[in-house]
Length: 165
Image (cartoon, rainbow, N blue to C red; front, side, top):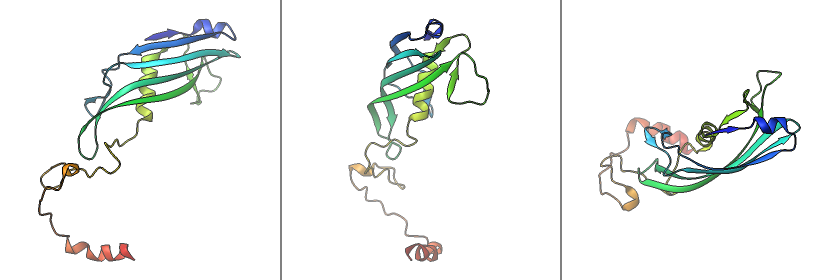
């Protein structure tokens, strides 16, 4: 979805609301679609002294699997973001501003980038998740599997002693 902010850049003090539902079904993480349904975006774009600031909130249902036990999760999330848009920069090495020379902002690209950068690297079903058995692969959150796990490697006993000190 393209938002034309050129009128905002021309009129100081002008503002415009943002309300839409973005289909980001093509956004994936590790080969799996990330969103269950559309991402609802609500916010505001305002011109202050010739610089347009865009603030918005993104509400979505995150469709992922637990990183320890591989259980499917569908969790509602809300993230809030704020950016400063400019038509041009005097210096080229400034990461504080988003440059949109034609005054047109690709909202879908901005929202998907913001969400991907803010998502935690590890998502768990529960902080106390026990994960999977390394021998049989059973979900240990549902109970012990009864596998005979390998005894400790005796070559690492000296290292264990050092760590206990």
